Length: 72
Image (tube, rainbow, N blue to C red):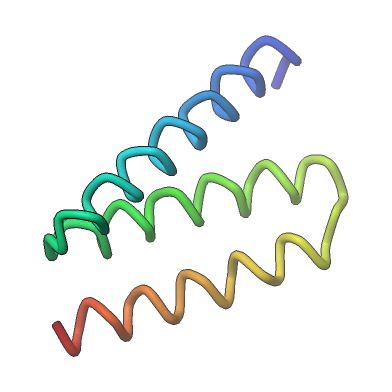
């Protein structure tokens, strides 16, 4: 992928992060789904940048978000 494409993916990650914060403030169930989308986006971003420790954090975040969605 080109650098322009990755910039768009990163902007998508930022946008979903802001949407997640807004939904968390409102305490809506959809925040878990947005969190999964956000974390998955950053898994790809950090894998592309070869930042594997940061990528592992987002893998954990996806797992916790799935668990949170299940318990909600």
